[in-house]
Structures are given as C-alpha cells and as structure tokens.
Image (cartoon, rainbow, N blue to C red; front, top):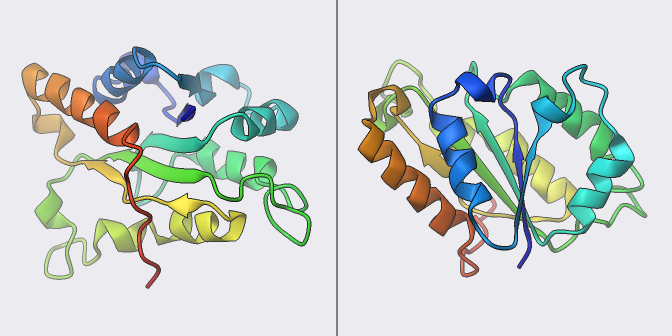
Length: 181
C-alpha cells in the first residue's frame, strides 16, 4: 500500500507537534510526505501535480492542526481546486474511487471538551463531518480519524510515542471505513 501524507500546516518549521508527526511519517516505507504550505507558499496550487500524487497512492492522509473547528485555509483551497468535477466527482469523476481517506488532526484542547455537555457542544466527529461528506462525494473509504488531543500538554516523550502511534495507525492496512450516519 502506498500512502500519501498531505501536511497542511502554515508554519511547520515552528510547529512542535505537526513537525514531529511529519518526521515520523517521513521515516516510513511506501510513504510520500508532501508539505503543501512549503510547496505553495504563494498558494498557487499545481492542480495536475497534486492530482498525479493522489492517483499514485492507495491511501490519502490529510494531516493538519485543528483551527477554529476546521482546517487550515490552504486545505480548503486545495480541496476546491484539486478535487475537481469530472476528475474527483461527477459522472466521469472517479479517479479516487476505492482509495482510503484518513484525517490526522492535532488539537490543543482535551478530548473531553469535544462533547455536547462541554463548552464546545460538538464532538470531533461532528466537526469533521464536512471532510467525511467530501470523502463520500469522491468515492473514497473514510477511515476513523487519528486525533491527537491536548497537544500543548504533551511532554517530549509523550509526543514521541504519539508520533509512533500515528505512523502505526496511518499505515494499518486493516482499518475499517467509518459508518455513515
């Protein structure tokens, strides 16, 4: 299985968590790590190059920090231009059908905060629903996301272990698609 990790972090050099997760994935066999903000500092995305990358991999991982209950802005722009009608969806848009689609998200808050009874009022699953809908639209298998909560409280040792856990999870060929609710 060939895995593509698309890293969407606007300042990966100064990111403790996403930089470490990225470094761990770069050590893995059959993994291509693509640092999207570094590839497109002007945000002018090479659509054909991105589509080729996607076509040449079996599993697509979107790795990003959770910003305002959503994705970094370049990820949204990337979706808008790369996942094009007639290529990724529509009557002839089948280029990604059957591939795995995994979200790997880092979150500053504790897991308990993401519940109907907390200040945030929503679960992470609910907040990631637009990405699950995107996966459904483009015909990919939406896998249970890898969520790293409370990242600001992690010691270096804990972060190292979480990075290893991430690599094991992201490369697990036995992950089952999430049910559609």
